[in-house]
Length: 136
Image (cartoon, rainbow, N blue to C red; front, top):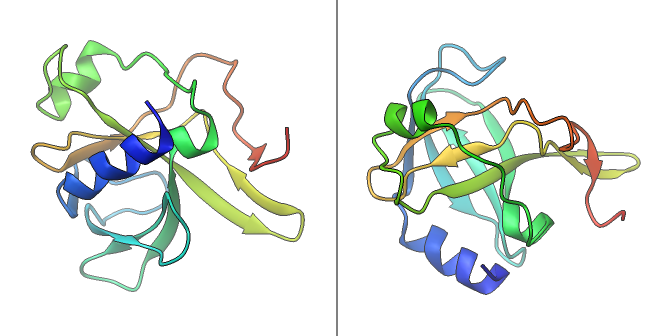
C-alpha cells in the first residue's frame, strides 16, 4: 500500500473513531474524531469528543510502507472485522526536542467500515516503542 492509497483509504473511513476500550492512559474516553492536519499528509489529530484530550497519530504506511504487523483474530473480532477485511493502522506520534517519535509496538487498529478501533500491544519485539520519525 502506498502512502497516497493509505491517505485515500483513511479519508473514506469513518471520521468518528469508537474504541472498544479506553487507550492506555486515556480512560475513560472512548469516542474520538480523526481530523486531518492541513499540509501534513498522513498526520491527524485524534480528539476526544467529550473532553479536551488530543493526540497526534500518523498513518503507519507514511512511517514505514512495509509496516504490517499481524493483527490477532481476537482483535479483529473485537472491532467487528473478518479475516479478509482491510484494516487501518495508525501510530501515536510524540513530538519532542529530538524530533517526532512514533510507537510501532502499539498501533491503533481501525475498522474503516464501522469506525471501531482498538490499540493493540504487539508481542512482536521487532517493532520499537520509540522510533524517530524519518531517523533511519
